[in-house]
Image 1: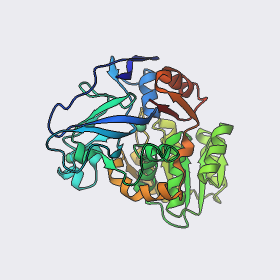
Image 2: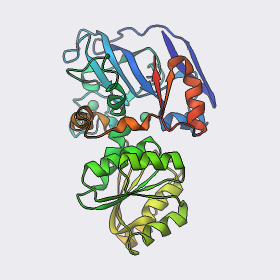
Image 3: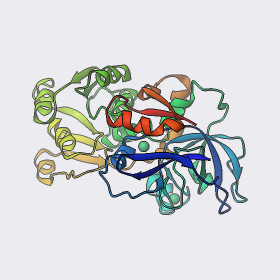
Image 4: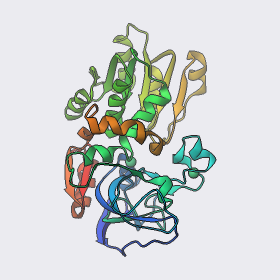
Length: 345
Ligand SMILES: [Zn+2]
Ligand SMILES: [Zn+2]
C-alpha cells in the first residue's frame, strides 16, 4: 500500500509500505476512504516535539472494514467506520468512565508498530472498542464523508472543550484558537446554546470561517490586547466560558485573562509550555478543565447532527489533496494557506 511516512522536521514522504495484516484476533483491517492532516501532526512537522521517524503519521480517518480477526464481533467486513484518534478497548475502567482517550490498553496511530491514518490501509487494534460503525451510509456518500471524518478528532475535541468548560444555554463564550479545533469549538458552543460566541482570530480567511461556524463576534487582537478587548466587549466582566484550543502559554493566559471571576476554561490544546498559574485560579475562582478528548465517547451524540446537517463541521476542510500530495498538504497547513487538509487515497 501507499502511506505517508514522517521522517523528521519538514520531511514527510509517501512510500510503499507492507499491506497491514491481522496480527491478533481483536484486529481489523480498514481501507481508508478519507483522512486528513491535524494541527497536532504539524507539531511533529515543525520539530516542536521529540518524535523521531521513520514512522507512520495521521490519526484521523474514515474507512471501510476489509477484514476482521476471529474475536471481533461488533464490526463486520464492509462496514463504514469512523476511527477515533486513539484506539481503545471499551471495557477497562477508563473506557467505562467515558475516557477512552486514556484507555489503559489503548494507543496512538503512527506509534512504533502501528499504521498512521494517512495511508491506504490501517491495522486497527481492539477493533470492537475502537471503531464506530455508521449505518446506512456508504463510501459513495462522498458529501457526508468529510463531516464524518471530523468526528475522528476535531469536532469531538471542540465539543470536549465546550463540555469540559460546562457551556450553558444563554452564556457568552470566547474561543481562543482559529484552527480546525477552535472552529469546531465555536460550532460546539453554539450547539450547546451559547448566546454569544466570540472567536479570536486575526487571519481574515479564518475570521470568515469562524463566522460561518457560528461566531457572533471576532476579536483580532492577541495576547494582552485580546484580554483587554474581551473585557471591553463584556462591560469589564469577562466571558462566562473560555475555550482554549491552541496549547501555548499565550493562548492559556488569554483564556484565563478573558474569563470572568468564577468562570470556566475548557482546554484541549496540547500543552506546549503552558502552565496554569494557580494564584490566578485562586484569586479569581477560575475553574480549568479539559484534556485529551475522548472522541469515541462523543461520536454517538454528534453523529446525528452531522448527518442531518444541523451542524457543518466539514467547513474546517478548506483544502483537498490526493494521498500522494500529502507533503504539499503539510506545507500548505504549515504556511497557513490551508486550515485543515483533506486527503483522498
Ligand atoms: Zn487530530
Ligand atoms: Zn480501555
